[in-house]
Image 1 (tube, rainbow, N blue to C red):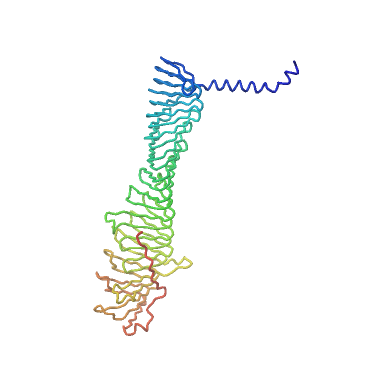
Image 2: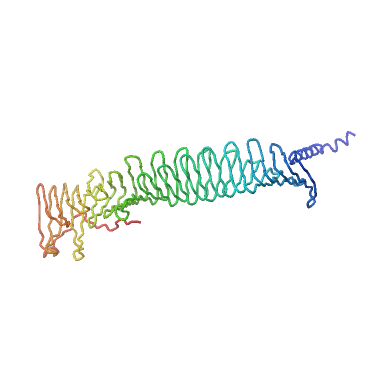
Length: 479
């Protein structure tokens, strides 16, 4: 007897394991707890029970109620019809028609479905809920409502334990800080992050951002967007563009990288609107409101245009500060120097200052060149050179030029629209005044003036090009 027991001792663990499996399987069976009427039949070789009236099923902590049901015993499945209510702890699932699969504890709901728990309420045309994973997949006019947010979409996956949502198709996420729209959005509630892709729009108190992709940080009130980015500032009618941006809503501060552009929209959009292009840009939208553009900067407003390595635009003062090899154009006039500052009040050019910065290792003199509008004299350029040049304009036309320190000028003379030689003047300070037709009407020279007239017949024998003369043709153009 002892030998026989020893011989089959290895089967004992297997025996109890199979009993445990059978017990576990029995526990997973859907149990009918109540029905006003019950009938049985066999369908395709499977035992089937049809229950009607106040039907109740139980599987573990899942309770199911409905008006009528068909229970498939072998496959452990129930078809539920009429006023279907499924409960699990604090979860409630409501629908008019559903299939409940006991083996994987999953409900497929048709004909409209509502999920309720203490954290959120979800409604949709169709839904699947997995009780083991606490995961809902809903489709068709989906809406999820929570005290802190609201999401509408065509499809939604909701993780009940973490309250994370993954939505697709006409998605709109509404929070206290922003409204986010996109083709696809991943919403992480606890972390306060939203990832959006495809036709993205982020609307906040002061800005509207559109892009290919975006990430919104609701707690920090920060957004990061990339791909065809556009930001409309609702406070000052400005629009900024870039390939990548970081927008800080609380600070009213934006960083743009790659192909940055600012458009300051005005009523007369074709002429008064300001355009600033650059590799990168920083926008400070608090008072004072200003923008810093860096790398291949181009600026355009009316006849005024400029290029430089770094430019600062002060919106309220309507002034522009340019550095790093700046060049300015106004109609036929070109000005370059170490540092240039322009005032454009009322959308019109008022003053331009060009300053020589001696502290720079490669400091250069300010240099102005004016081309003749007459095509017959297109090779004749009036030139002004000095440490500092100030230009004063009236109705966008040159009115006065003041040159200070190491001042020298060459300008051509015309009489009855015919060339009549040139003048070369020098002095510590030169003031040149212009009439309403932008022709020189008066010249004033201070301290050791030097002047020379070159008759027309001797023009070709004189050097009338000042050191540093250069015609720069790559004026910025509207993109």
